[in-house]
Length: 498
Ligand SMILES: C[S@@+](CC[C@H](N)C(=O)[O-])C[C@H]1O[C@@H](n2cnc3c(N)ncnc32)[C@H](O)[C@@H]1O
Image 1 (cartoon, protein in one colour):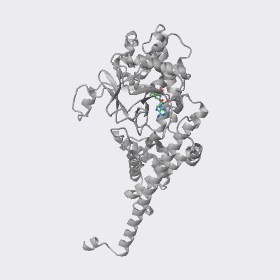
Image 2 (cartoon, protein in one colour):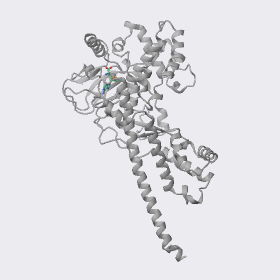
Image 3 (cartoon, rainbow, N blue to C red):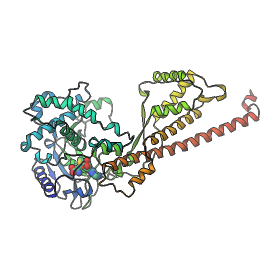
C-alpha cells in the first residue's frame, strides 16, 4: 500500500480530523497514553504509539459497533434491501449477479464516497489509501520477478475484473441516484477492494450467542453462530502488525470492539496487532509489504504431476497402459478424505503466539504433508495390483521400506524441479537482497524477498528428505545384511524347529 500520501501538513490535518471525529462518537474511548503517529519514515503509514507506559489488560480504545462501516450500518441497505439481505449466505452462491459480503462492502464504500462531505464516515474515509503496492497493481515486468511463486495465480486480477463487471457495474447503472456515473469504475473498485483486503475485519462475535459451553465444538454449536460480516473498523485498522511480537488484541463485544494491551507496553513502543499466521506471499498479496516475521509461515507448493513423473521413473518395469490402470485405481479407491490432490503445500512447524503476543522457538521443517506421502503410497499399492514386479525386483513394492524410499526419492527430485523452475538460484536472490533492510523496498525487491523465502523453505525440505532417505537406506542395507546372514547360516531356527 502506498500510505506515503499527501504532504506533511495535510497528512497531519487528516489525522487530527479523524481523531476528533472518533472521540466524538457516542461510546468511543481513546486512552490518554496513546497517540496516532506519522510512521511514513519507517514505511508504515500511520500507526498508534504509546506516549507513556501502559499496564497489561488496559483498554486502549473502544469502537462502538454503530461506527463500523458495513452492510448493517450503511444507509445503502435501506435503499437496496434486496442486495443486502443475507449477503453472507450468498458468499458461495453460483449466481454471477448475487452479492456477497465483499461486493456489498465495495458498494457501501462507493456510496459513501459518492455522498462526499455528507457521509458520516468522511473523516475516516479520508485516511484510507487510494493507491497500493499489492501485486494486483504491479506491471507485467514487476510480476515476472515473482518467477514461479505460488503467489502468482492467487493475485486474481482477471477474476476481480469479472466480479466488478458482473456484480458492481450492473448495480451502479441501475441506481444512478445512489452512485453518480463514473468513468473510472474499474480502477476505483480495484482500489476499494484492495483497501478492504488490507483494512477490513471479519466481525465475528467472540462468545457464541447460545452462551454454550466452549467445549461444545460440534457441528450443532457451530451452526448456531451467525456468519462473520465484513466491516471497516475505524482506528482498529490503524494498528500496524508484527506476527512474531505484537502487544494488542481486538476483542469483538456485543456493542463495541475494544483494543486491549496483551502485556506491559512502554512509552515509545508501537501498539501492534496480529494479522495472522500468513506466509510472506500472502502478506504481500493482502497488505503490500514484506517482513522477516512472516518467513516462519512461508509455504511452497509441489505439483502432483512432478512427483508422479519421478515415481514413474523409479518403477521402470511398468508400461504406460499399466500406469493408466494404476492411476485409475488410485482415483477409484480413494474415499472422500482421500481425493487425488493436484498439489501439496509444504510448510514448517511453528509455535502459536503466546498470551502476551510473542512467538517462541524456531520454525522447523520436520515432515512432508501426509496427503502427499499417503497419495504416493496408495499409488504404489495400486501399481502392485495392476502389475506384479518382475522376479529380479524381489519383494519390490511389497515392502514398506521400498515404497517409502521411492516416495522420498521422487519428492526429493520434485523439490529440485520446483526450485529450478524459479529461474534464479537461492544464492543469486540472497545476493540481490544483500545489505537491503526490510523497510522501503521496491516492488521487485519484495518479489525477490518472497521467492527467496520459498527457496529457503525448499532447501530445508530437501535437507529433511535427504536425511530421511539416508535413514531408510541404512535400514534397507541392514535388512539385506540380515537376510544374507540368515541364508548363509542355513534354515532359520524357527524353520528347523518345524
Ligand atoms: C490495517 S492498515 C494499518 C494502518 C496503516 N499503517 C495506515 O497508515 O493506514 C495495514 C497497512 O499498514 C501497513 N503495515 C502494517 N504493519 C506494517 C509493518 N509491520 N511494516 C510496514 N507496514 C505495515 C501496510 O501498508 C498494511 O497494508
